[in-house]
Image (cartoon, rainbow, N blue to C red):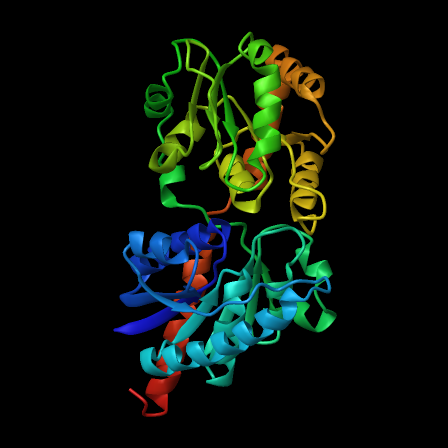
Length: 371
């Protein structure tokens, strides 16, 4: 059975989309999929929880700015390259698919050194540093947003294919009725779903706390506060909260009439795929390269979202919520724009591209007497 390597990690936003591609791929062709990711952090638990073999390697964070931490991380990246070389030599994959993140660079470099075909995917509107480095090794580059290729060197643009962002199959099969039951939404009440995550949730949670009584006048508010964020607002007939919604997220999202969230690529693509109007509060400032701001502006330009800036207070949020609560036609227009923004089954498209390359490679080997 052919083996196929997946690489990436550092955050769940690089792992969950890759797992969606792996699941689609295993339905297309008989294959063994394994994952190479950071030996520390959440990577192992998420991947092994999905039933895939995981190999951890040293991984140094890639920074654009000057920092003393770059010195130590450079050695970790080098150590990661040697570890990835050892894994790939032993496992002999037919192809390596990178979902990005700082943990993907050593496996991509090692695969290219060994002559293994590399595919890479970029989730955000503008490519991150890992993708820019992986361009050196990748035969094909897949993007989510239209226009991303303009950020790439001209010589690389012929290798670019736009697929959208892969999301789990469960989102396409989600049931609004099951979501309302999970959320505990009263019959006939529209649902505002607030999605705070582990990174940058404090500002979003603060806006909800300061505006909650007014929000409940218009919506039943279902609030994911993010793991590890202290939260002491008790539930009532107009409000419930969870640190992390987990496996019920597809159904919860299907039940939402409006979503308030950050604008990470995975989150906005899940919302768009289910045709949900959004109010976006992008993560901004020195802790980010600005990718969430760019993602949010793309959704805003498409008519699928309204965008809050980093200085927005509860009055600004309430103004947008009231506007959409009172204007059903505007909400419907935004929902249609969201669905049009992300019509593709990106996981399926990526799986088909990987399967086709693997089968071409096997055929070529067969012609040469390799099989």
